[in-house]
Image (cartoon, rainbow, N blue to C red; front, top):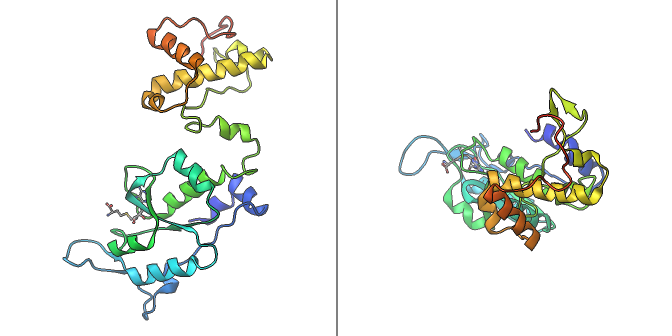
Length: 245
Ligand code: SAM
């Protein structure tokens, strides 16, 4: 499950350059019985199986020996994994991600981890896809991993806003045109346009983010214009040559 994802894109690039190291541990290897059993029926009855504490904690303790990593249990009941958390985790020298399966892990395992994190309000069959999401989000924040750091800086949530809109060639596609300012070569106007697009998108799609975003007085003025619906054309946008997305 991890192989293809770790061998693609920025994760592959980072691993090849020694910027990221991912070691996988098979929990079954820490089971001591003949059948290498890692799950058992729940006390009190009920459907499904529960991951036993002994092989799981043995795996955690073995994996944690060298780097003293921050230990994270992936769990739908955990705190939300957000961009802010990804940024905090990217500053940790090492992370240990614990993936559950079945009905989840024996509740006592929680005493052996530092955090429980959820990637969203839905239930996956196992913690592996959640761990991959976390690895990807954290790895792209490591210095040098994403080619141009600019692209991380403007990413959605990084500055507390959604990202701007982007276009590439052709300048006109089926009657839809690119905002003229993006073709102008005027970098100051383009930067203003992109900031305005970030504010517009966030206001339209995630107004809740605006409550905690760091906003300048210019940003607040633009937001007032956008909210009143009386916003003049985006500075430098120019005349539309056709429809625009
Ligand atoms: N019965 C559990 C519950 O409802 O809280 C769900 C267990 S789930 C089927 C099995 C494993 O998938 C969990 O132990 C956890 O590691 C992982 N998992 C499922 N959804 C997740 C989510 N939203 N975020 C992080 N991990 C998740």
